[in-house]
Structures are given as C-alpha cells and as structure tokens.
Image 1: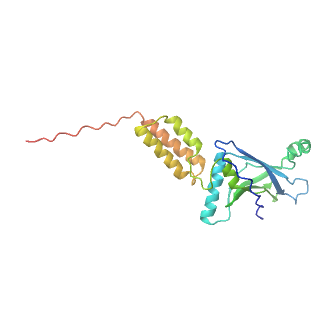
Image 2 (image 1 turned 180 degrees about the vertical axis):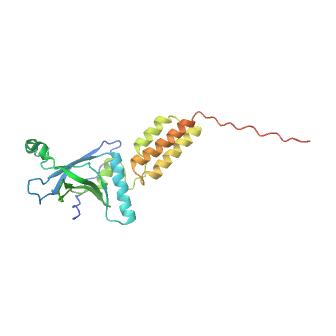
Image 3 (image 1 turned 135 degrees about the vertical axis):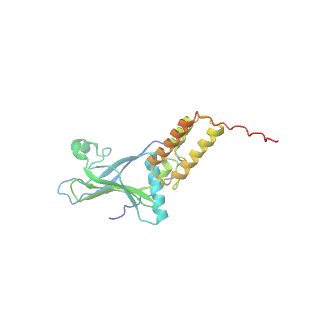
Length: 222
C-alpha cells in the first residue's frame, strides 16, 4: 500500500487551550476497481482530545519501537463520493448513496502522520484518505508530540472531587495526578479513566474512616 503524501504544514499558531474537536474534510482515493461509481473523493471525520492523545501516543510508540506504523479498528471516518461543502448539489442529489459503505475500517498512525483506511463493503477494494500531520493535531489541542501532561478531563475530575484539598487529601490528589501523568502516554484514555475511577472509589469508601493511634505506653518500672 503506498504511503499517503505528507501535506505541507500549516503556519504555526498559538496552542488553543481547551479546544473542541478538530474537524477534517480531506481527499480520499481508491475504489477505482469497482464497476459502479463508488470511489470516494473525500473523507470526513473529527478528532477529540482523547483520540488525539491516542494518536500522539501511537506515534511515540512507532518511533520508540522503530516500526513503520500502528493500526487499530476505528470507524471515525466517513468516506463520501461528493464533498458536502464544495459539491453540495451533487451530494444532496446522491442522498444516501453519497456515503461509501465500508468495513474493516482502521486508523493508521506512523511516526509523523495519521489517516483512515477501509474496504468498500463486500469487496476487497481498499480506500483511504490523505495522511494528516500529527504536529498540527497536537498544536490544535495545545499538546506536544510525546505529551506528558495530565489529561484535562482527569484534572477537572480530581479538582471537582477534592476541591481545595490539603493535608492527606492534597497528597492523595497529587499522587493520582502523578499516576495519570506517568500513564497518559502509555495506555488508552478509557483504561486511564477506569484506573482513576477505581482509586477515587476506594478513597470514597474509606474517606470517613479515622485511623487513631493509641499513645505509647509509659514504661513501667518495678
């Protein structure tokens, strides 16, 4: 499979803190061996922060392990015959047939870019979209390739659960943030969320437990 052409990087801009999902409409190709006009011209998808972190994490693993790419099943992309923005009339006329039905959809991540690939349903014909630079995706969310910051949703959750924490609570909160920081670039977001939730549940179950230490007994002399 030919590697997608790397698009030129857009001019740099300041990171957009708290940015919403990044939406893409990009060129797609493939499907030319079909008997009917089912070749897609564009792929439409959006990437939220959780998926962006996964893509950045996969890219870091590709580089660290010296492999070509990482793939996982993923259905974020819709492959369309006509661009609904630049070819609105054709897209409306095509109706449901504007969408190319697919199966075995995957996200593909290399060291520098990511793209989506699939098979046209009930065929062995591949289609894929053009690769998109991971650097631009990271910039949109104010992340850096190999980013090791605590995910914003995790930070907010801890702040809501332990507002103004001090003493033991402060230490517990700092410990959870340290765990999230260490694992954010190594495990998926759902697994990280589950780990934090488990720790918070354990804390809540024991929050009212007071551990008292009996004063040391005075030595008894004969």
